[in-house]
Amino acid sequence: MTAFILVAGAHTGGWVWREVAAGLRDAGARAYEVTLSGMDGGGGGAAGPGVDLETHIEELVRLIDRVEGQDVVLVGHCYGIHPVRGAADRRSERISRIVNVDVGIPEDGDPALKLVPDRTDRERVLSLAREDSAGTLPAPAVEEWQRWGSVAGLPAEALARLTEQAAPQPLPTLTQPLRQSGAVAELPTAGVLCTANGSSIAVVEAMVGLGDPAFQALADQGVTFFELGTGHWPMLSAPRELVDVLLRAAAGEGHQVSATGRERPAHLRPFLMDVKERPRERTGRVDLHLPDADGPRPAVVFVHGGPVPAGARPTPRDWPAFVGYAQYAASLGAVGVTVDHRLHELTAYGRAADDIAEAIELVRADPRVDGDRVALWFVSAGGLLAADWLAAPPSWLRCVAASYPILAPLPGWGLADSRFRPAAAVRGAGRLPIVLTRVGLERPEIAVTVEEFVSAAADCGAALEVIDVPLGHHGFETIDPTDESRDAVRRAMRSVLGHLGAGTD
Image (cartoon, rainbow, N blue to C red; front, top):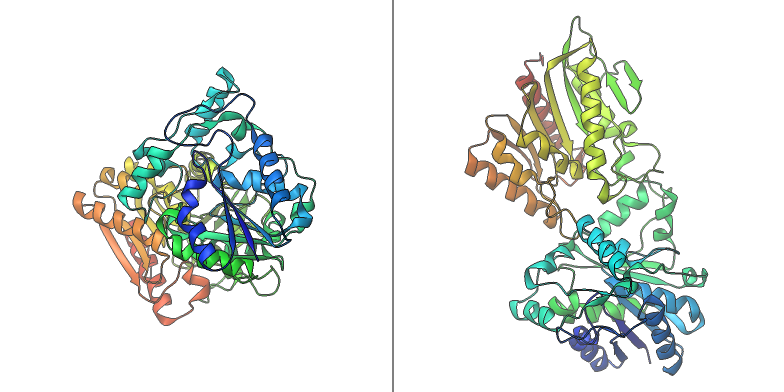
């Protein structure tokens, strides 16, 4: 009989698993809803002295030792994955599988604080820890849970219960590094990805396809994935569906991601159009694709998305889609510009914005570029970087374009209060032309941000042109080589160049 040990995330205890545990027992399994020290709930009661991550790991180890049989599945949600991984590392011979519920796989030496999505919240934790290293982090107010993950699907009464039962989190549980011997790495693992919180199998496949060694373990034979169309607390918003997923995970089911090399990753497939090759020059992180033209020409700067791991090769400016777009712009009389910016993790949007601003200055200073006629074209998660330029467009910026962009931070990204919110910034765009290429088969959590942007643009009278690709996917230029897709690329490019006053014949 399978025994599920269910470990909750920050500020919560075993009570959050009540419905899931009941469903597992009804299916013939055993279930243990764990409340770790200091997490008794009820909205009060500080943790006792000395409660840290090691305390929680040892409590799980003792529970594992009491559970009869060998078929033990450890389930960790959010913070809970840290004590789960620590305990599994010490009792690997007893564990048949680990299930990560809407959380990544921490590495040796990672503190749970690394999981906190918002930089301001992380700094707050560190500040509190400096004042009192053994203190606690107050439980979130009802309106603050969204900062820790999407509350999509949570009924109002469940959100109220989450707030009422939440406990202050002992700071040492968040700041103490997780130590692993390596034994846990050999255990089969399943990931439950909550799509309303911004994670999905498609995102995992994209990260593996980027070729960075840090992500190749996600394509191992013993790693599988499931999706749930809900927010960060599926045990409260979709308990029945989570029960089904846990039972299937314990049986070894789930989607396995293809390892790099079995199939060419989507971002490295050919551009959907044959474009005449133009000269290409590289300076630092910037490539210029040059037209056949005398005198300064307008420029289109293409801004990739991410995060793209620092070790990914090739880098985005050498990906077929960006080379194709830049060469296409050059073939029509403009300077096509590709840039490698340093959006290597979600916390690096500020650094990436600085890289783009620096690249633009370099481009505008080039004598072959008309520095007063520049367009910026943002792609995918690079769309958030459009916010600064929409909020206060400089005179030389003649057009902003975006292809299947993310136009508001996704839940769980920790950017809710940041400046990177194009859907809000568009109110400052005035009459700046905006060309948006929208795909009909977009991931729902991204499509919501696009519709929010379109609505905001309409409300403020922005000069928005929408080009639809009804049967297009995210990244359609290399995965949907159809006449419809090619027509959309032509229309978008000619619109952008028209706003630049560039010849497009």
